[in-house]
Image (cartoon, rainbow, N blue to C red; front, side):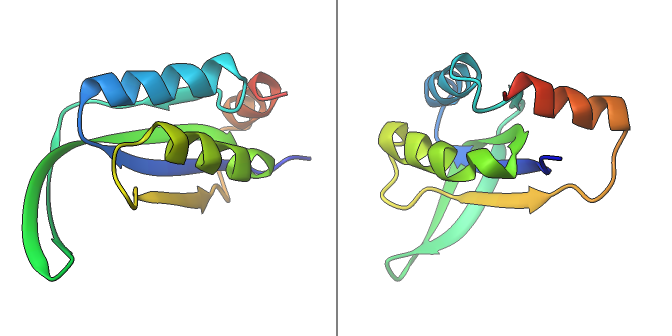
Length: 105
């Protein structure tokens, strides 16, 4: 059976979040993409400490779709190096995990 994963990605604004989320769901690469209130990020970039308000996307998908999702995000994302990380889901409500798999087929 396919392995459900969450992919976490930050974006600079709602327009980018909606564009990425809609494209992923339309293409059945993700069952759902969630985002909410902005998060404050503090990070070092090219030797300078930066601060930014960002939106955090949680992308519900399967491991088999990771490469295509990464490629799509990179193509639509305004950052040179977007944050894209995946977390395998070891446990979860079986009907929910089954839903993720069925919506990404």
